[in-house]
Length: 31
Image (spheres, rainbow, N blue to C red):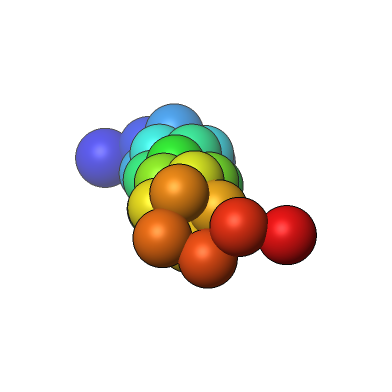
């Protein structure tokens, strides 16, 4: 198994989750 590839996948998944959460918050809570 390639641990570097797994780590990269986790980083991408975390970035997508954070981005999606910020997007939803920006919709429900206008600045």
